[in-house]
Image (cartoon, rainbow, N blue to C red; front, side, top):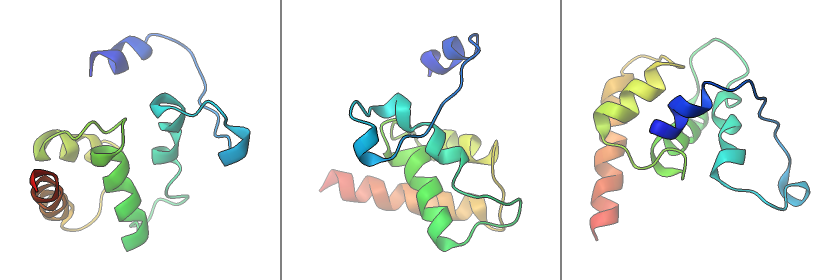
Length: 100
């Protein structure tokens, strides 16, 4: 992810725009959705976990990283019990689906 390192050098703000207001949506415009999935510091519920895993692995921003890179990225912002195992299971499931 060299682009992420390059972007870290800039002072910018990502602003969420809803559907019809965001006529030029692309992967970069959606990157802020990951950090807004949970509005609390507690353990994310199953729905939130699915959103997190999708954003960090399946979305254009996630880039279909392998298990280790996906885990590192999620771990940097979130934590829940058995997180590593859940991420491993999710990534394996997605790899099987994409190989069909």
